[in-house]
Length: 406
Image (cartoon, rainbow, N blue to C red; front, side, top):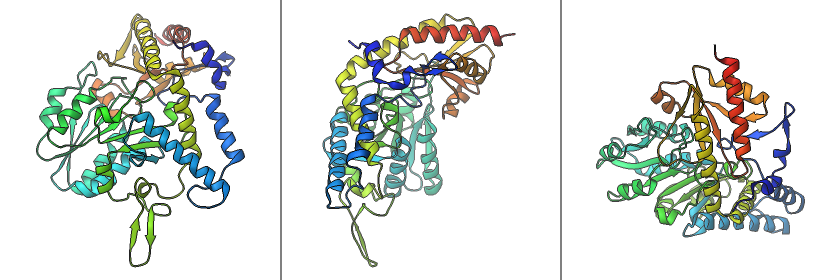
């Protein structure tokens, strides 16, 4: 069982005071805080072995390269990928999705083809496909969700035709916290040989993910949302797709041989890693995975689900408060509004109380359009949050209601 009060000591920033109040950090869907062992690893790397990877035969470069490739092995184990070369380091989920849109898209998407996304996608899993469709004259089709935030599976199935070449779907909605039936979607797609890309940015930090068990074709996530440094992300891709896909960026590191007559490319995964990657952040990701693995992903899931249930019950009891996305399976976050008060005004009051939440569209404007609203208040949780912090959020909401309701 997670000893939250003990492990909170691993996160130095949680001792900080904001406007003289103890920090209550409930903006974890945007980025998580970093444990001391991750921060120490970053400092130690820069202090002892920093050197550009895969570039030199000297000691520092060799040690840095080993650390980088060991980080890849750690990610491989974390996702249970078949091999290291199915793990491509990117700058984050956004770049990972763009990589597939540009590379897979240039090879496999033609005029008249179809790509399916859902209505609840983050902009990063909408705009790259829009751009691809504009470039190729393909069609982007959208699977709707109902007013509880539940993906409408019959409608999704009805969108699939012989022209469908890819389904790109979010595992956990960053605006609603709804967990989609990814395994079912993948099985449905694969019966018609349609590959599936999963946006896992809000999933991997909350529950175990096994890409072989899911049988997904692509899986993307970001390190900074799971206790690592910013500027690092992962694209998992099945070997058969990555081998067939052309490079999306070019430059040093992704080539085997270069002449003015012809360039040949490096083997996987390096043909997708042009230039100097964020090798220190990759090492920090490995250390973050080590940290959460010691806690046990299943224990994290149980604890965080208990927090979400507690917060939902407490918020639901506030007069005039509307919660969005009450599908049966949710995790990580809760989005809501209070009466006719603008979310930004509530956010400002909560900030003065030391409470960090997120307000806005959460880069998911179609979700806001679905509910006929402009924005929501979003509280998102990590395993270092407590029920006492949720109580402070509830008290803050009551104060905001008194101050702002007329």
